[in-house]
Image (tube, rainbow, N blue to C red):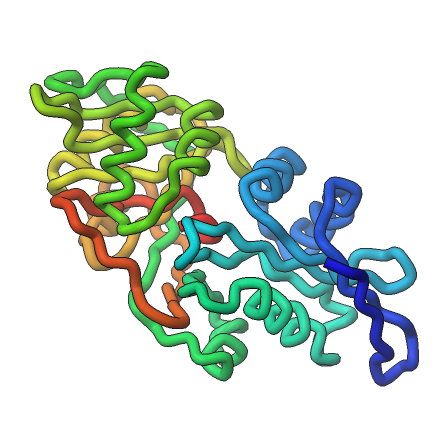
Length: 287
């Protein structure tokens, strides 16, 4: 993508460029300024898994927008930030319009805060659900679940990728390879394959549990409990779609709901073609 420069209402040059590794320290500061708990490693992972745009004024990063492509037809968007001092000048719209142009022809999904809803609605996004954010220092002592749940090995990756594809309707093979390489992975083994998996990895203030995919709510709970059994005394976060009804259960475990965002899509929603469903997200950005 070529560098694009425009003049805003202060006649100061603002350039829109591809997001690269050199921008990431500035991106970390942007997220810290709005109290998003990303680490530099989280920015590095997100950029390695996808693509992004940077908005700079005289070399100073003032905005970011990232996306992750799932095959030719679908993408997720996220980590869309404009520094507070530059808000109200159309920078967010400019960033997002450039993101949409880069994904022309794809269905684009995202999770929106209250502040972003109006912008996304004006761009044709519709609400398709709610995602609840649960997090806390996890203090409950739990026994490992066992009973068909076991740690995944490298030879299980293809089965996990296939299960996820049927549970989401998306080709997320590359993302799953990266997530399994960086996290603790468990699965429910069956004679004819697997019926669920979970990943827990370092993220933000502690550990995030997700994605979690399973064929039943009870199996999803078992996979989550198996991960939680290893995390006593640690800060844990888990983002769950409201439709599956896990929020009250997580609260009963000592993981209260701390926030919620709106799931939105522009275009068609992907259609799962298997019995599995996603019960916890990898992150609000990645889905």
